[in-house]
Amino acid sequence: RTAPILAPSLLSSDFSRLGEELEALQSAGLEWVHWDVMDGMFVPNITLGPPIIKKLRKRSNLFFDVHLMIEQPERYLEAFADAGSDMLVVHAEASIHLERTVSEIKRLGMKAGVALNPHTPLDHVHYLLPELDMVLIMSVNPGFGGQSFIPFTLDKVRELAREVTRRGLSTLIQMDGGVSVNNAEELIAAGADVLVSGSDFFGHPPYPERYQTFRRAMDK
Ligand code: DX5
Ligand code: ZN
Image (cartoon, rainbow, N blue to C red; front, side, top):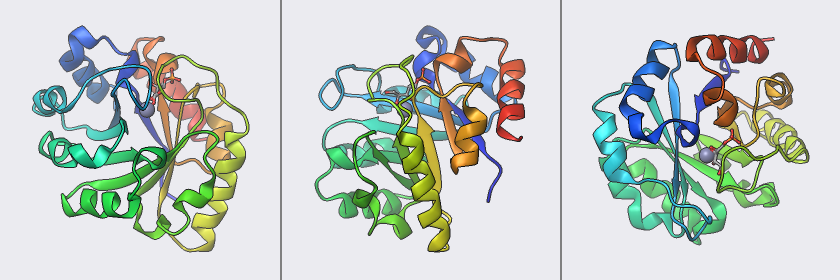
């Protein structure tokens, strides 16, 4: 098992200073950053898209983990590849031909992930699992930062972790929504490999100290 990863969600950062925020994350020792792309259809909120990611790609060597909360993500795979995304995560609920979408993401040279809303059964990724670099188990209904963690999603993580091990796969398990220094240890123990944190990370500067606090909880 790889060392757990923290991916701060820029949704809670200062959008007027995205370049500086990315630099601050990197000098705080982080390796991943999580981008939340919302289209106002799949989720009620609208955020940002490929042109902004592309501009900021030049300012950062962080691993760009791009979470697409958009309908029919297959329409934009090339644009996100061109913008410099390292990992593209699409929602199972938003893409009818999910296998085709996943192969296309990999053909474009990116790592591929699939996200499941809290109530979506794990069955949706059962056959695709060997093709996936990551499965994102949503622990809130996507759309906004600062929502409370939905406890039953922990059972999904435990079940998925067992399945990944049973099949000898290296698929990463990510959790996103309501993650904090207070539940990080429990989520890692349940089998999560990558934790996304928005409000609890950005709401408690300075970033180097906050990252170390997360690390201590995650490495227990
Ligand atoms: C929710 C987004 C998350 C969000 C998490 O729709 O996918 O990435 O930023 O925010 P917190 O950590 O505040 O729940
Ligand atoms: Zn997200």
